[in-house]
Image (cartoon, rainbow, N blue to C red):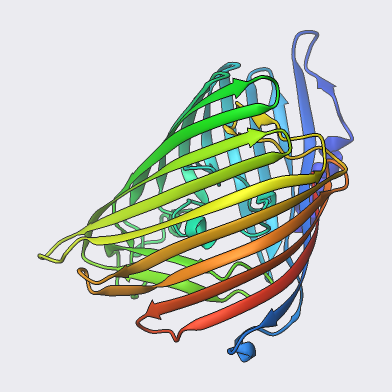
Length: 383
């Protein structure tokens, strides 16, 4: 599959630009990424975290443009598995309104972007638990210089692989997401941004082997490293009716300093007289450019833009998460994590990251208390 996508993309790129007629142009741009990681671990449970190197992901694909239409498709090779990643079609009604349909990352808070763009190297556990990844659905986006709004519908993640696989998928769980952001620019280098996101979902298919049972939710996050993929905290909730969640967000940037933070709350309502299950988390990130021209804000995504080439950035991060709820008698664990990351942006395509993260997890019914120190580095190509 990767050979097919690589050949197709390079072939399409060689035809740039193609003119359908004098007024219409069809364009194709190749896309891809390569991540190379190395990590050293220090932990009382060292046998579970061997030092080493890995290529967490390789992607290849293309973006397509024709008048007000655009599309993207890419394939991924990660941990000996090949799979489809982004696959969407978008129509722009005008410069401030668009509709996207397909498989992509839906908007829910400040971390609603590619995993390769996280300034903390890996997404904070607090965010990884509740921020959706790639989801099959549709999303409408409206943005102005000071206001951003997104609303989307999606089906459960398993649907992309199991749909029409009777008897395991005679129905699909679905979800609704929305993100609202207001921002204000002061002078030319100061931005204040406040927003809130909300979500609702119906139960998803459980993984107990039973046929067509949709009555549960699973919430999990790994330790913030890619060389070793090990579960940090996680809970599975059955007999569920539905799920509600929300997250307020705050962003402030002034010159070469920026702050980002979020709080997450999630409640799963249950049947048969079971108490509702509540989980929450939060993180705070302080960013500073040791060498650079300062941060800029993108109103079209309601996030900080990627720093300019030749920028050296230092990022401090703290986050706390709890999936344990005494009243619901569910103990999915608690996580406390803090880290420092140095990012150097060589050019628009190549970035190097150096990271140290301390993580402590406890209060999980099935896992022992674990403390992990990780020193890791990454060289990334992204285009």
